[in-house]
Length: 323
Image (cartoon, rainbow, N blue to C red; front, side, top):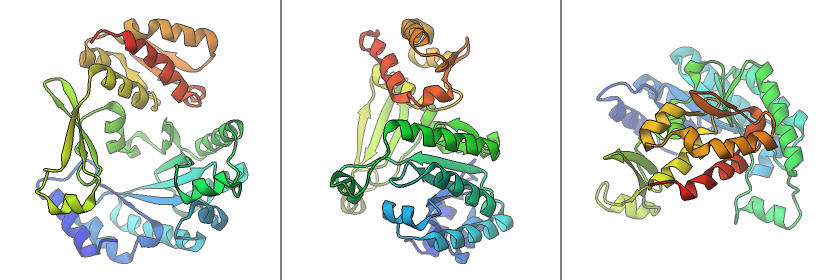
């Protein structure tokens, strides 16, 4: 919605004290214009486009203000700009949409790859949010959500298909053609590294005296615009147990998993000492869900399917962990 001139001003301000390692911006395909070339000239080096689906009926189900033709047009323009400016390109796809088949989902992947060959694809499983038009259509029976087994089948099929297209699953919903094309800012979140969140509702994490502190911008955009800069952020120190729980939830989303040495340095507790009993229970009751070495603990693809349950299982040991 912002004019190109404002985006250029914003990018120029960010790059005025040095070029970021990664400078990413999200944009819908129908919004991308030739005039956005000025933004890439100013320093933007990664574009993320919300495609979701290449099929009109699924876009309509999602309530997207676009269609197949606009998606194709936006992707073609992105390819032209990428050929000129060499930025990295991510595309978001949605799966497990009510009425979507495995063939539909894999066809979306094929068409996307054939059109632009993005170096990064984010494949998200549709979540029905409460109090949304989509949720109301599900509640009154106009849409039928896939059951868990069919969702798992679709995800596995899509993961297999992305692999045959040359994409490596480095996080449960993220795939890259090579390590250099991974999303660097997301990797900071998954490692629980520091990051600054600016704007209404934006969350950030900083570390002060060894303790993680969460900052959150006020949700009211009018208050944010009216009051003094940085005066509307709440500050919430995380307890060690809260930090460890977040670390489990975020770290186990990735193929790298949790690095044990980094865990010990951060929390002062050895990972194996905390979780060996729970990991042993997992090994006895579920085959092939994880890999466990001296260096790291990581989930396999089968483990990804049970991520929430595994995190809950491990986190129960933290209820009695020393502070």
